[in-house]
Length: 285
Ligand code: URA
Image 1 (tube, rainbow, N blue to C red):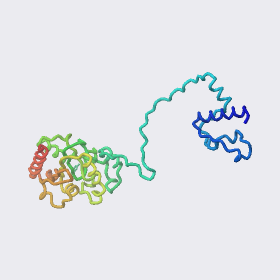
Image 2 (cartoon, rainbow, N blue to C red):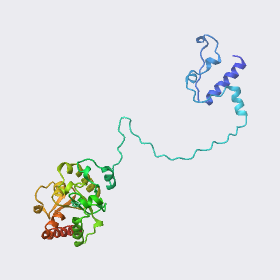
Image 3 (spheres, protein in one colour):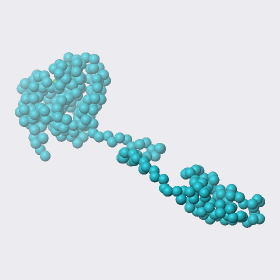
Image 4 (cartoon, protein in one colour):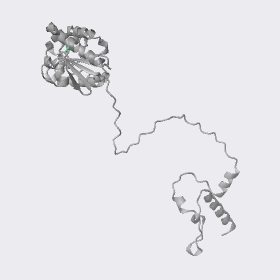
């Protein structure tokens, strides 16, 4: 090996050492078919490795690099700092977690009801009477279905029966704006007839959702259709009225419908008695 080759080889070895590549060995002359060349000295793995970074040229250029003054490169302008929430990590084979379902609001239920066409009351109604009152009421009144006045105004219990209901509430110190009032069906049955089973079946899921959204302490069922729908009790209202029942974690009381009292004024004392029970219940712990 002449001096020039030795120098060049030394420069190569130093260069590889700086890259962290060490442990070169020298092949025995007998094993070498042709005289060793610089190509043979190049470690094979480096040639096969993917070009991660540009390898500086050997000795002459490297010497120039160390000798030359460092190049002044303006630092890159850092991009604006954007803090992103960590990406959710779940396996491709797992379904992502379901969005947390909070309690439904009355607004959401009303939106879902939309321009309801789910039963045969839809074509003859003027307005859907969804319900009215405090969305966090302790007391919910449930009537049978809208009458002509309610269908006209879109509000529950605004006709004669409604006036009696208001008076009963006043008698026991309840304010209409503190309670929530709705019906078993939300559309007026033609001629104020009793709602039919298929109509109740189509509409009652919305009533249950309203109760679930409000979570009242007490439900007051006004009349037989409400008692049947909410409590599943088929017995006559005059038999079961004035009693408290369980409706999930809520209590329910059955009483006569104000319209019944309008037809039978002597029965007003029954309604008054039951309203006093409501008052006492709500006053309790
Ligand atoms: N009767 C009911 O049952 N509901 C009303 O909203 C009005 C009258």
